[in-house]
Image 1 (cartoon, rainbow, N blue to C red):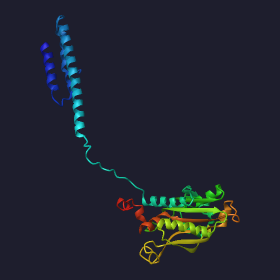
Image 2: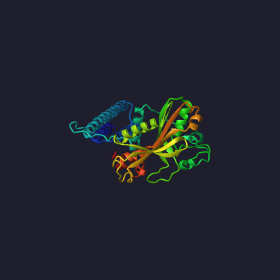
Image 3: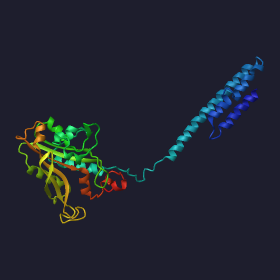
Image 4: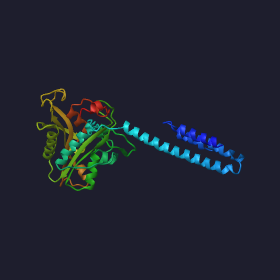
Length: 337
């Protein structure tokens, strides 16, 4: 039996000498419940009383020897694995680095920020409101009663008979006038919704930026000066603006506002379709009915309002001829801005 125990020791030593030895398999083979050492110990019943202590001590010695050898081998394998990993993953600190790709604002977001900065520079504050709106704020409070024909041009998405996705950011103006007494000077940017088919110039979702000023003595001249400052800052100092009479239910008088084409300088080109002017927004003096509905006395206060599409300003600024490019998230297109 002594010879058998020595054979087990030698076999374990030989197996552990292999660089990629499977230590768990060796432990089970030699020390497990059905291992070779256990099998030897089960045969101790046939030994004499004098032989049992000697063989038992030798068996314990062999067990401790193998356990220690396995532990040392495990530590050696761990050290070797770490050394290999450090070698494989070493860095050459003298090599030039690779700059990570840096994202940037979407052209719509950038233009909206530019627009906000211009009006903030003129003393306006930014006010936001809910995109899911009551019919009252989206239409009725803006002098557009039920069945008014102006609703047809702002056909939007209704959730109930009284709740809808806002078709303009003008409800923010009404909510502001209800809560705040003049003087008021705000802009209200945000998403709006209309039931339009998707094409080169229409989308069921788009962005608007509207403005409102209410105070004593506000005139059409203040509106023109504000919009002229905006146009020159956004499109260039040489830009001129033109007012054309129009009708909006919530302003009186009302106007469509054009800017001189900054590509051809008003001579006529592809961008302005040969007219020399490009329409950018609608504006006017706040209708007395709207002021009165917000408990502001139109005999004491007056105001102006304007609204423009962020997509339209972006398309004009960058010469984009199809609105759909702005929504397709094609990096080849977006990288140009």
